Structure formats: structure tokens, C-alpha cells
Length: 116
Image (cartoon, rainbow, N blue to C red; front, top):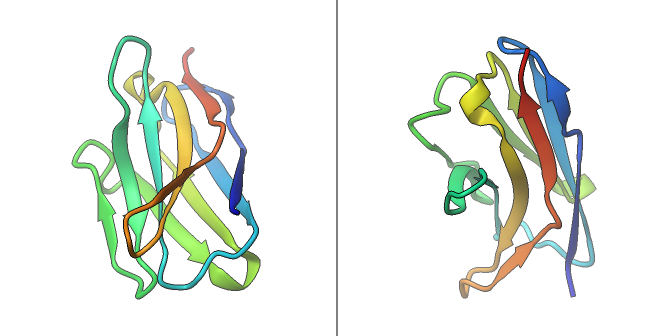
């Protein structure tokens, strides 16, 4: 069984930065895809960024050039560095781990609010 715990959310002004962390307990194998999704009020959950075990990354167009995903397999941790934040980045951010057979584990979410 895998449990994911996010941290690092909070309130930040437009143009600011935050770094989200997601620590996994249990066994996260290197071939699991790790990623971040977000859900704003009244909207569906959407992909923000993913990182495969081989290092391939994928980003939503809306965050390319501003967000960076990274993973530390030795620490069972995935990070999301968010720079140049915009009010439209406000959402609950969820950590995801996906097995090779497409089973998803989810964290409980962390709130990110971008406001002046």
C-alpha cells in the first residue's frame, strides 16, 4: 500500500514561487510515473506535470517554462517547483503515483492560493 503526503502549499503573491513536495510511504518503484494534478473550484482535475521513471517529463501548456517537476527515487519524493505564479494557478494540488498497470495512488491535496 502506498500513501502520498503533500506539503508546501500556501498563500503567495502573483509572481512569487512555491515548492511542493510529495513524500511516499510504502514502496514506490522507479518505474512508477509520478506527477502533480490540480483542481480549481468548479473545475475538473487537470494534469500539471508528470515524470516517468526514466526521466521523461510532461507539462501542461499553461505551466511550461514556469513549473519544474523533479523526483528523488532514493527519498521516494517528487517535487514541483512553481515560479512566476499567477492567480489562475490557484487550486488544490494533488500528488499522483501511477503503476505500470495504470493504478493510481493519490495524495490528500495541498492548497495553493495566488493572490495579492
